[in-house]
Length: 371
Length: 240
Image 1 (cartoon, rainbow over the protein chains, first blue to last red):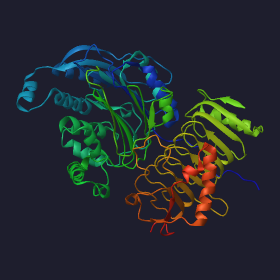
Image 2 (image 1 turned 90 degrees about the horizontal axis):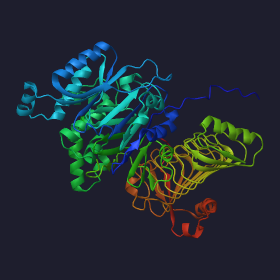
Image 3 (image 1 turned 135 degrees about the horizontal axis):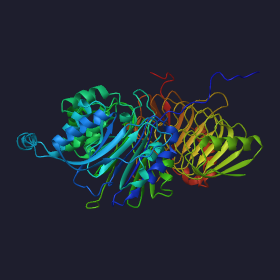
Image 4 (image 1 turned 90 degrees about the vertical axis):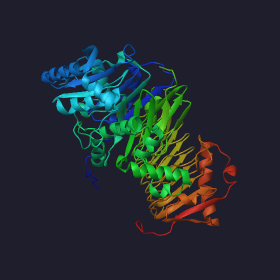
């Protein structure tokens, strides 16, 4: 019998890949390490997005907000720089060093600015009478630049950290941004396989705000309700993809509302009601309250995310674990990745390797005074 | 024969393996494997492939008669739609093991992840058996339609962790799950129930465990020192 194949068996494997690590004692690690880890998961992406977040890379400007800006045209740059000069004291500004590589097609231009809010009358009004902090002011400026200046996007805006991302495989993006020249104590990376939103430079991961950065594998089907909820608090979604809401949600829950990262994780990946019902009274009341207050903050759909800040690195799965996440420790290092092999590639014999439960955050904090 | 897999892209590695199999190799040893997908996929000859390192996802998918021995940990989707043969993992393994498995054996020494044994099935003499020596995540035996799943809860890196997760047997409508010791009834899905192990069951079970213990050089007596219970679907209708 002649058995002809009925279809093409050469299937593209569709996933996203993520990886990250932290030295909790603040040891600086070269960019080449994270590149090696994410490059192992080459087949989890398709060349339409790669990116990195790095912490501890700007020790010379620890007190300045490091604004990484992406410009699609020179008018965007001119307008943004006029805007920044109007509201900020600019300690230093420079092109983000890049190198031309054949793999990266038609890149936008990138600049970085180390800045502090200027004491304008507007600033004084906000601080003295509107109860705002410097961070609140930064957030509102980031939103305004992204929304109002066409072709300008704030890629990152935290202190002593930065995001580097674009269209390409992550190792190509790393080469473009000369990432091997940086040293950091927290690194995350992402290999993108965009499924239902465009693959463009601003849509690559990580998504950031202040020093928050998120890399995400999955799909947030609650994007609409999350976005509308965030708009009430002044967060505007301008990046055309779902992951952005996670960044703003964490800023709202942790920085603004003062939730611990543990509680914020329980709001994003809340246990099911039937499981809450089986808990002891205290826990049941707490989780009921969180689900009631943050119903619009719940992330529906499959996800594995890594979120980093100057405080540490956190890994979180959706509550039924529809995306992979593996963690490992070695000495003061904590690793988190989509595949164990991505960890083994840079840490061949970890002390411990495990898969966290769905909805249960893995939290690795930087030790006090480490940086 | 030995193949050094260090830094070799998965397609190239699998091509080398298939060439070796086609050339009549009886046993193949893969050195320095790390993350390469699809090892042993579709191989339909009784060859033994020993893997040093952590193999990537979909290990032994569609495999039809070969034996794979992993000396360290495994990742996700091991034994996906496997027909016959055996996969032995001397460490832990990830999620979605034995997905739609139709025959053969998967032996994991330590812990396994979520959705293990999802939609395993059996027909006539084809009866897949998946044994996990450690603990399991949620949705153990999800949508299971046939075959045998065995959970020992003995060999784990995390003694604090419960033996199995929530939603145990969700959508199960065929096959059988054996658990060493007790099962947490609050975590069983409503379509399954607990049944005693009959003498006939015990005999069959001991056969499977003997093979498992042989692979890992474990003491069968110790494994059998605690009684097993059986979890079965209450109905054969999948969506009742």
